[in-house]
Image (cartoon, rainbow, N blue to C red):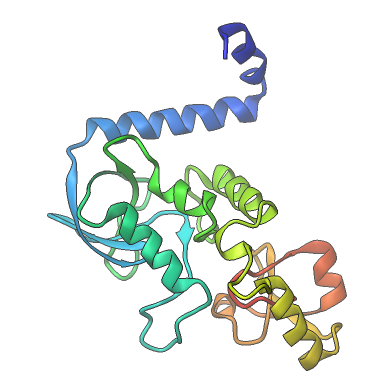
Length: 226
């Protein structure tokens, strides 16, 4: 792309902010010392040498190791993707406003030494959702990556082996249990609607007719409410 083709793109304030944020993150990451990934716990949590357990900021992949929950749809695939990308590799960590979560895990953006932004890549390839419960620097970009992955049916948004899609199979379940127009649930601050019992309803649960929720929210990719 020639320089004169770049200038119009960067006139839009949102485009400028996104480009600036990503360049800042890449610069910060490449200036930090590289550290070894000793083990991948699951799709969004890793063990880094000298740091310990690291939770990737802004990413939520399906559960595989939770002691009180079954392995969720596409959880093994997400874990395998992150493992193939990171285990035994050296990475650079970058931090946001909060350095640790309530479980004592380090919160970080993770970059491979070739500059690959791992948090973004997991969402872009469809192996996880943008986790937007708490604000972070790349929130809007991650939301856009999730929308693109869903539209292109990548990863967990794609076809299941055997010819049926997760959306189609969950729709059949919903119709059999609720007649296709039953009650779903939303949270006070979320942008998605959920089935009863979804783990994202732990903080708040507001009932809503499904046909109303479809008009205002997106379906949860974990509990598949439609």
